[in-house]
Image (tube, rainbow, N blue to C red; front, top):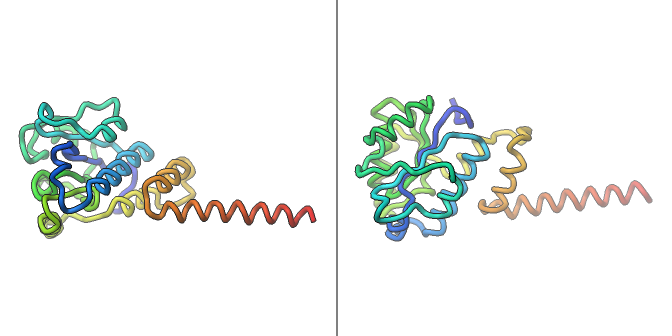
Length: 211
């Protein structure tokens, strides 16, 4: 069964400043852009999302992400594995979803350990590869391979988001998603041009009707 807005929870693991500074598998700008898009999508589609931190007294959650969830205090822990923290485990259980989508820093540590533990617990796990990052490209890629071999499914940010929309007839989310695409997705330029072209053709059609 495919992902839909109501059949999964989203776990965003340790998007903190010091972790971000050590990322070498992606540019920090790309990781931030993708995780912000994921966060905004969770608000658009109403999918439950949880933010976690590790040793928050030493480093804050990235401000741009925290601002999108003003009602939430990230669950802080002292374990590398979020799925070994009782509060995180309880939140996932109470969400009532058997599908869990995860992204986080670092890929080869906190994300990998959490994904493997969730799979062991019987969850169907999806990993967002381009919103996660590791100490090197090799570390990131090998961790992804390990998780996939264990049964996780890999998605990119925009393949995940578009899977949730699936049909442009879903008018309750179409407008907000189009804005999100225009703002963050490389295809956003195409969406803007398409809209401009439609408006141009419509205006020409009106002119033809009056001549």
